[in-house]
Amino acid sequence: MRLTLYFREYCSLCHQMLAELAPWQARFGFDIDVIDVDSDPVLEARFNELVPVLMDGETEICHWHLNADSLAAHLGEIR
Image (tube, rainbow, N blue to C red):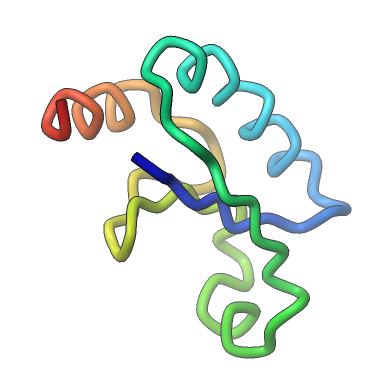
């Protein structure tokens, strides 16, 4: 499984979410693509004030803060 974290380099919430995902990633073995929304005007317009946003394809798992319940439910559905 590959999740996507839409991110901004200067965003402390983004770095926090990425760090909080590490134990989940170790436990469940998914990959994370980290994409800086400021590198693409379309992504910047789509996600602007929502970052960080954790997605699986087009499904949003959570934004701003890691929602452990949402992530656990999503991973449970996938497994």
